[in-house]
Structure formats: C-alpha cells, structure tokens
Image (cartoon, rainbow, N blue to C red):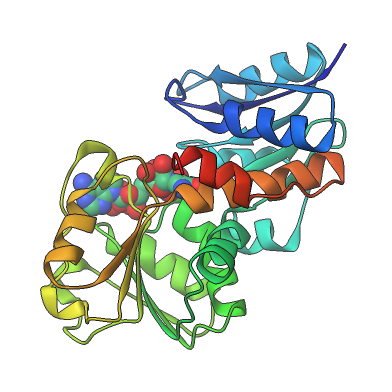
Length: 262
Ligand code: NAP
C-alpha cells in the first residue's frame, strides 16, 4: 500500500495540493497518495489522530489550524518554533515544521528573481507568522507588520527583532520594495486599505492567494506596481514539505509551469 498524506484544513475542497504532490511523486518515483481532510473547527486534534491511526504518514495544515498544529507537536523545527505555526506534520514522530517562509522566499528569489530590502507584511495570522523569519534571513532590513487586530501584529513583532507593527489606519505613506498580502481578505474578495503611495514602480505586490486577480493585486496594478499571486509559494512550500517527508527534493519549475498552463 502507498504511504498516505493529506492536506487538513477548513475549507480544503478547492486545494491544488493533491495535484502538486501527485506530480512530485510521479517525477521522483515515490509511491504515495495525497488527499484532502476537512476537519471540523472544533475537531482538529481528533481528526489528526484518526488519520494517524488509520496509517497516515504526514499532513499539511492550512487555515485555520496552523497554530493548533504547533501546539500539538512533540518536537518542532527552529523555523516552526519562531513562527509558532506548523504547516507540515510528520505523524510517526510528532514532528512539526513550517515551510511557508522558505516557500515564499524561494518563489521571490528563484522564480521571480526579486531582491528586496523593505517589506510591508499585511496580516498576522499563521501564514504571516510563517514568513517573517524567512524574509529577515533572506536580507529584509525592515519588516513592518500591519494587521486589522493591531495587538496580534504587535505580539508577532515582539518575537522578531528588526520588525515593527501597526494598524491599517497608521500605515506610513512611504513606498516599500515588497508588499505581501498574507491576510485571508482576498478569499472574500475584500480590499485592504493600503495607500497608493505604499507602491512605487518597482514595488512587487505579492498576494498569497492565487488563481485570480484579487482586489489587492488590482489596486497594486493601478498604482503601477509589479504583481504576483501566491501560486509559486504554494508549489515551493509543497516541495519543501515533500522533502521533509521523503528526503527527496522535487523540481518545482515544471510543476509551476503546468499549473500556469504554459
Ligand atoms: P489566518 O491564520 O486565519 O489569518 C488570517 C489573517 O487575515 C489575519 O491576520 C486576519 O486579521 C486577516 N484578515 C482576515 N479577514 C480580513 C479582512 N477582511 N480585512 C483585513 N484583514 C483580514 O489565515 P492564514 O493561515 O494566515 O492564511 C492567510 C491567507 O494566506 C489565506 O488566504 C491562505 O490561503 C493564504 N496562504 C497561501 C499560501 C501559499 O502557499 N500561497 C500559504 C499559506 C497561506 P485579524 O488578526 O485581525 O483577524
């Protein structure tokens, strides 16, 4: 029988992860199945346990469970400890990792070839917490974390020296090299109150959502900024999870090209 993996979250129905991992498995000759598990909002731990006792080897975790997954682990990687959020579970050992940050940074550096110094990070949830450390390690000299609930941004900024926090009403008007939308506002097609002056011609506006032009990306385009959705990050974080589970690093470019239909 093939080893079993899955994405767990709520909702998960429209995820591209099963297709991506099937491509990685085919390309690397690994025998595995990757499915989808929707956990009830109050039943994450019980659903993980059922999957594990049913023979499941590993899980990717998506919203809203990344912080709960962190608390469930018996051992975590340094990057997951910094983020206090886990998106990759190794069920045999209780180990948790977070591959979101390296996924974003690899997309920026390898696929988009985009160097950056100043970063405005919108959001302070699991995804945002997962990328702050990697952005700093990749050379960001300034990371401002803006969130609707300011206290949450302040709590995250406290954990990462070299970062600062604010609410949307007190966003500075200066331009940033990189603006990352790590909120789930795009899922509801809601715009974020980011001033046009935050974008300059060379700003890259990066939305972790993918598959369509979000209000955030549309606003960035109107301001003349370069834009990217989060499809590359999705593929890169999946590749890193695959490596954590299987010890084999799949090639990402062909998979990303297929997803983009090119
Ligand atoms: P989460 O932990 O639930 O956090 C949600 C964040 O969005 C919080 O900061 C929340 O602010 C903010 N938010 C929600 N609705 C908002 C609105 N209407 N206006 C302003 N802020 C709003 O979710 P997550 O796990 O961080 O995921 C966030 C997004 O990233 C999702 O769209 C997810 O699909 C995407 N993502 C993509 C990838 C990828 O590989 N491309 C990887 C990870 C995540 P409050 O704190 O004020 O509630």
